[in-house]
Image (cartoon, rainbow, N blue to C red; front, side, top):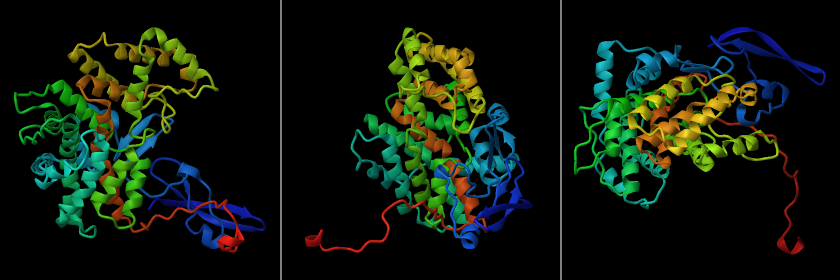
Amino acid sequence: MAEKTGTAQLTIGEKTFDLPMYSPTLGPDVVDIAKLYGQADVFTYDPGFTSTAACRSAITYIDGDKGELLYRGYPIEQLAKDSHFLEVCYLLLFGELPDKAQMVDFEERVTRHTMVHEQMNNFFRGFRRDSHPMATMVGVVGAMSAFYHDSLDINDPWQREVAAIRMIAKLPTIAAMAYKYSIGQPFVFPKNSLDYSSNFLHMCFAVPAEEYVVDPILSKAMDRIMMLHADHEQNASTSTVRLAGSSGANPFACIAAGIACLWGPAHGGANQACLEMLREIGTVDRIPEFIARAKDKDDPFRLMGFGHRVYKNFDPRATVMKESADEVLELMGIHNNPTLQVAKELERIALEDDYFISKKLYPNVDFYSGIILDAMGFPTAMFTPIFALSRTVGWIAQWKEMIGDDEQKIGRPRQLYVGETYRDYKPVDER
């Protein structure tokens, strides 16, 4: 528990209530209102829970003013430069970086679980061919609880760990299968000889008719995308996973709930929305028109991919993602692509224009990740599924932490009721 640092006083009418205050290791102090309703018969009102700490967590810390993101205390820039996705997975799950033996063991366990149950192949055929891959993923991941009965007991630490390994291993396979199904190509099985990100790219782009070799630059870029999206504190989808988990639901159901929440365009669909905006602008000569619209308070148009709800400074993930974007675009040789030209010019304007600078509307991670995924050959419908498989480890780490929290209880937000007061029912003839 965080250290208690004193009390805050709340005066309601003629009564004053003392509320405990706690100091975290990083971030602002918190006022504990858990007993406020019982003591004062009042609720607090906080739409979106933007000023409410709903849990205690030791996994991820964000300082939006500094533009800082830490996984278990490690800056994301250092991890993106020197680490790799599965090592970050281990860090998020277990709290410390693995030694060499632990890393080898963890990688082997994940690699051996990448196959999905053969009957799940038939499950895909129940979806229409034009189903969005996210719709397929929500259904298939939820259905994992019907296939893996030996890892559903949330009170058994070993079963929780098996479920965690299975989901980290199988989500890329399921995402790739959803993609292949949507384009009418046969499923490609995972290869144990490939690393995590290369294996995913191989399952997405290989075909039985010819050999496919994953370029290391693309593999590195995909690995970075996964690392940068692995966790992001108590966002909407993570809070959804925790809320579902608070009821005692099995881990596969909880992750399926997180995927469903991530599907929203204001959350996981942001990079898709950004790329669609770039295509709507079309050419560089039309940028001033859209910049003017973005500055017009009466125009509903918004520039996607700039600024962030949490980061009030530069998104630290964007710096790393920009480097990968430059490497991928150089490899693919598509510098004359109109969408890319629009993106580059918008990036230049955002970093130089006083309007963007004053409002701190810097390019964020979604701005660059959409460009990278498009250059790799992924359709926009696959952007959010890739986000989902990347975020799975964060969801699992948060779910695992919640299960072990002795203060954890079933989520039950309150409300500010504004409906009708008490009234008597009248038969239809008297209305």
